[in-house]
Image (cartoon, rainbow, N blue to C red; front, side):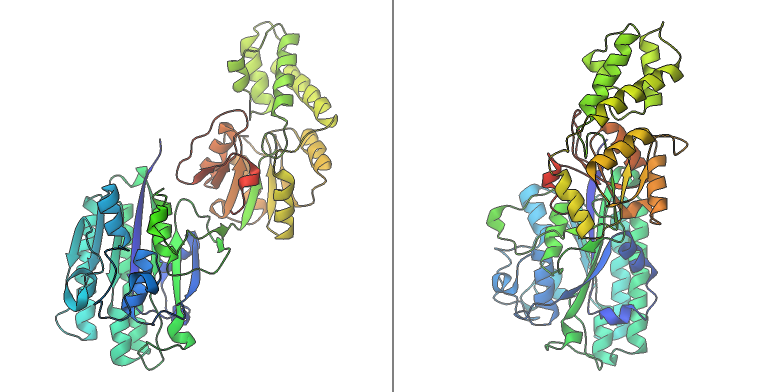
Length: 488
C-alpha cells in the first residue's frame, strides 16, 4: 500500500554554516545523515535580509518576481507568487500549517503576511525584542507545532525559529549565539519526535527540510555581501533521497519550495514560473540487478523454465511463467516440482535449469537500452557499484564477461547469502561489502521480486520494469528505460 506523503520545513533564522561545525546539533545531524546538508549561496541580486531570503525559500521564485526587497514587505507580489502552503491549500485543497513568531510572516505587520492563506496557523509574538523573549516565543511556537503535528494531519508545514538571528543581532556570534543554535536544534528534535509519534507515522512518507536564510558577521548583523552573510544552507531527508547523498549541482534557496512540491508528487504548473527545481542527488553507491535490468535475459530464463518444465511433462502457462521471473534456480525448481507431480527431485530440476539457462547466456546476451551508458557513467564518476543477482555464480560470471565491465566492485550471486530475493539478504550483503548502510544505496531493479528484496533491505529503488508492471510509491521511482536514468 502506498504511504501518504507529508512534508515539514523548519526554518531557523540566521544560522552560520561554519558555526554548525562547532555546535552540537544532533537532530540536524540526523536529517543531514539521512539525506544531505549542502551550502546555499544567497544570490547576488538578493539582499541578505530575512524578508527577501525567506520569500525566495517559500515561494520558489527569486526576488525580482516576489518583490520582497527588505524586511518591510510593502509592494510585494506574493499574491502572484504565493508561498507553498498557500498554493497547496488554495489550488489543491491540501491541509497546510504555518507556525511562526516573526510578525510579517503571518500578520499584516510591515506589509505582511508572507504566508497568505495556509489552512492552519499559529503565532506567538515575542513579548519584547530581546534574545530571551525570542527564545520564549520559539518555545511557544514549537509547543503548538508539536500538538498540531502529533494530533492533526497537515500535508505540508512550515515552522519558523527566530531566536538565533535575534541573539546574533544583540550579542554577536559568540557563546550566546551558539547556545541559541543548540536550543533551536533541541526544538527541531521535538518536532521530529512529534512526527515519529504520530499514530499514522508507519503509513506515511515524510520529507523534512531544515533551512536557514542567511549568515551573520562576527559582531552580529547582516545585509551586506560578505561570504559570512551570503552563506546559508539546506538539509533535506526523505523517502526519495539516499542517506549521505550528494547534490549534483549547487543548491539554491528557490529550490526549497520545488523540493516540497516534488516530495508531495505535485508537478508545478508551468504558469507558476518557478525558478527552483527539486535537487538532483548522487547516491553513495548503486546496486544493480542483472537479469532484465542490465541484460535482456528474462526471455532466456523464461524459455529455460519452459524447456525444463516441458521435459518433465508440464507446459508452463503465461501466468505460471510470470511467477518465475526474478526467482532463483532453487525457487523455480521447487515451483516447477509443484506443477509437475511426476517431475524429478528439486535438485535435479535446479541443475537442469542452471545448465539450460547458462547455455543460452553463453550464446550471447543483449544489453537493455541505456545499460552501457549507465555503466560508463558509474565508472567515470567512480561511484561504488555492485551487481546483485538471483542467478547462479556461473551465469553471473558469464554475463559480467560479456559486459566487459570493470565498474563492479563486488558481485553477489544466488547461494552466496542465506536467503535470496525476495528476501533482503543479497542487498544487505552487497551494501556490507561496500562498507555502506543500505539506506545510502540506490538499487536499480526490474522485477517485483527484486524490488521487494531491495526495499526490505532499506534501499532506495529505481524500477525499470521489463516483463511485469511496477507501481511508483515513495522511495521508488519507475522509469521506462535505463536511458531515462539521467540523474540519480
